[in-house]
Every structure is written in C-alpha cells, then in structure tokens.
Amino acid sequence: MIDIIIDMVLLLFLTVMAFTILRLRDLLSMAMILGLYSLLMAGLFMVMDAPDVAFTEAAVGSGVATILMLVTLTLTRIRYEKKAAGLQWRPLIIVLLTGAALLYGIHDIPPVGDIEAPAQQHVADRYIAEARNETGVPNMVTAVLASYRGFDTLGEVVVIFTAGIGVMLLLGNGTRRYRG
Amino acid sequence: MINYISIHWISHYNYWAAIVIAMVGLYMIIGHNNLIKKVAGLNILQTAVFLMYISMGVITDGTAPIAAETFTIYSNPLPQVLMLTAIVVGVATTAMAFALIVRIKETCNTVDEDELLEREGHQNGNVEEW
Image (cartoon, rainbow over all chains, first blue to last red):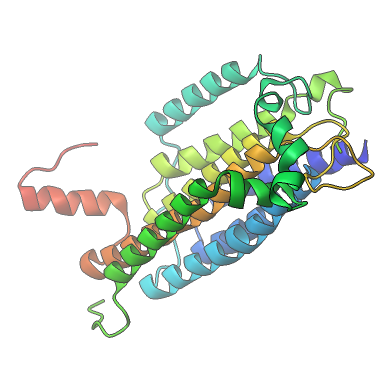
C-alpha cells in the first residue's frame, strides 16, 4: 500500500513539474527543474522495480542532460524565453486530440501489474528462467542487454558514436574562431 | 512490489500520468518558439514514454529482475532493457540538438523559431504565414 502512495505522490510531483517547466520563461530555472524532474523519474523507476533504468536515468537524464543544457545556455548567452507565448490554439487542439486518442487507446490494455498481460507472455519467461544458467549473470537486465540483445547494444553504441561525430563536426574541436 | 490489481479504480493511473506528461512535452515542442525549450519538451516526452514502458513491465508482488534465492516473481526485464537503450540514445539526440542550437545562435543570432522562419522567408523573397 505504501508503494502505491509513493507512486502516486511521485506521479503528482512529476505532472506538476512538467507544467512548471512549460510555464517557466527563465531558462536556467527551467534547466534546474528539468534535472530535478529526471531525478524524481529515476525514483519512480526504482519504486517500479527497475533499478538499472533508475541508475541510468539519474546519471544520464538528470546529470549529463542537465549539464548539456547548462553548457548550451552558457554558449548561447540566452537566459529568457522571449515574450510569454500565450495559449496557442492550433498546437493545443493537436495536443488535445492526440491525448484523447491515447486515452482511448489505453482504456482496454491490461492494468499495471497484471501477470497475465501479453507483455509478460512472450520471451520474458525464458529470460527470467534461463538467463543465469546461460550467461552466468544474476542481473537479468545486464544479461539481456549484453548477451541476448548484444546487437541492439552495438547499434546503440553506433548511434552514440554518430552523435559524437556530429557534435564534433558542428562545434569543432575548440580551435575554430567563434563569430558569435 | 506494488500491488496494483487490488485497487481497480486506479489500475491505469500510471498510464494516465504518462499521457498527461507526454502531452505537456508535445505542447512544448509544437507550441513554443524557443528552440532550447523545444528540446526540453522533447526530453519530457521521452521520459513519459519511458514511464509508460516501465509500467508495462511491472508485476504485482514481483521484485527487481536480479536473480535471488528468496524470490520467484520478477518484473519483466525486457522493457527495462529497451528503455536503458532509449535513455542513452535520447541523450545522444539531445547533445546533437544542442550543438545545432549553438551553431544556429552563432550564425543567425537568435534561437526563436519565428524569427528564423522570417529570416528564411526574406531570403527566399516570400514570407509565409504559419
């Protein structure tokens, strides 16, 4: 029962923070709140039995992403969003329609925690039953990440490598003269 | 760990919260002019999707998927693995977006979308209303 209360309080905080980020015009404050939001999300993942995802979200989402945003704010010397963008009708209508479609889509999927849900039926049983014998790793997430789906992870590394090359090409290696 | 099923009326609230947060992120992406704010919206939309996937892997009275003698029910490791990959790829995308923003600021001296569009329109000789 206490888990559900923690879960609901965290979800409430996350929703409030998302709206705060939406409203804030001071971009430095927005970066801070965004980091805090990621940290709370990591806590929520921990409550939902996903410690590996929680670590990664805390380190990467809350740490690296916040640093990247602060670096961008420093380099561009932008502190405030120009003119408080009032409520815009076209985006709002699109968002409300999408939200309604998603709500309609989720109303008949199995409830959270259902052991009979289709998501629990496919390969997960095998991973849980055999991962320790087949890979020798007690942590099933690590076993799936590095062994069963090793090619997935290779693809992920390729994406990071490509992004790194892209950032280096765009920003240079520090020797380029800044015109700004 | 969480006993969701026993309380029927809230059995989907994780999904509801994920949808509300995702829609806030989507509004930030399409409704705001500042490019930095758009990237923040993209981050929020991403984390909402993570929340949705992790909720799908939760099993009532289960525990974290790390093998131990005293536990038999584990939550589903597959969504967690997919979201681990997605978090890291998401940060790579964010880094790329920020690098682009820094270059746009250097070149055009603004990070507001409508000012950029206006500039582009003047260069092409026509200003479109959108």
